[in-house]
Length: 125
Image 1 (cartoon, one colour):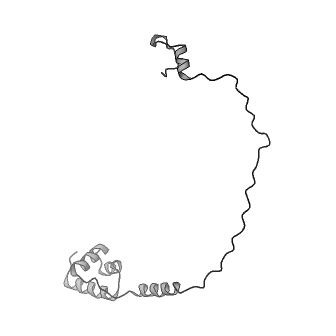
Image 2 (cartoon, rainbow, N blue to C red; image 1 turned 90 degrees about the vertical axis):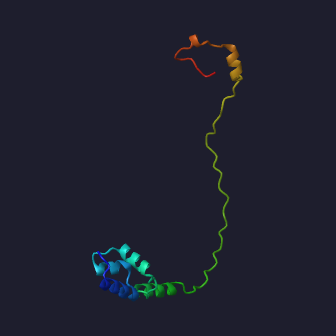
Image 3 (cartoon, helix red, strand yellow; image 1 turned 60 degrees about the horizontal axis):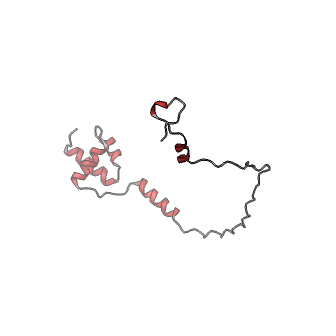
């Protein structure tokens, strides 16, 4: 695809009328949207008319941004304190009568050599 004088003039005309780069590419045929954007950039004709769709969108946006009536204040509802649910059958833990020995006490009690280790012996130091 080459940019002939005829194609460049058509590009300028369509761009000035507000057509999008995709629409211009379809009209010219054998041209991509990016090729149209690149050519417009290189020619320095970034300014253009506003398309009819964009004018409609701007009008709709202006209507949507019209001032609204202030909202009525919402009264805050009083919150109730959450009910505390107690279990029907509380867990009763038996008291332990024996003190749990510390690791050092267990270690001092029965040190094991490497040769005495079995499959069921703890290997933690």
